[in-house]
Length: 117
Image (tube, rainbow, N blue to C red):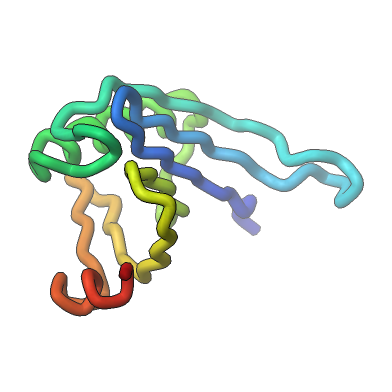
């Protein structure tokens, strides 16, 4: 049986950070960090994406470093991204980790904007 792993991606204005962790043998113990990756954020300003291609390149770079560090593949991840405002928006999205990271929201952009007000 393959070991279950959890991946977190934090997309910030200055850095993109990725952490891959796995549950410990004992449920009383903390998760074990298997690997991490960091890259300089490009295409971001004040927590907002201003250049989608540059931002995706930064995420790809951090994910690649984390995968190499953990010596494992990533099939899913939780993504955190901040902004200037104090509002919260939870969006369902899908990212495919193949040769190239492809991100696609499950709702059209006008629906996403309506849900984040």
